[in-house]
Length: 91
Image (cartoon, rainbow, N blue to C red; front, side, top):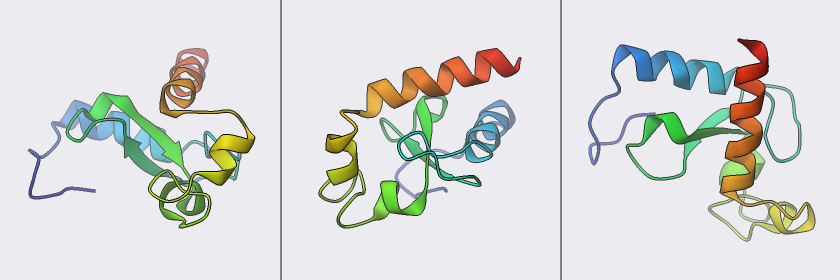
């Protein structure tokens, strides 16, 4: 979760990350726990929930060929919008 290239998250940011990780994948809907992918490194509140395949998978993952993202016509901003909506509905 923490890289040497960014500062450690605050307690509030950690709570936000844990909430995101508990959600299902924002792309394929796989049940959580998910991995938290930040849209921009170090901006902890822009994390989206992704299963390992949609996150790091070479074929489907955001860090790979992004095939499932393209099939579902999603990008990081669209998944962030879904994530925020789900958090707000749960509040």
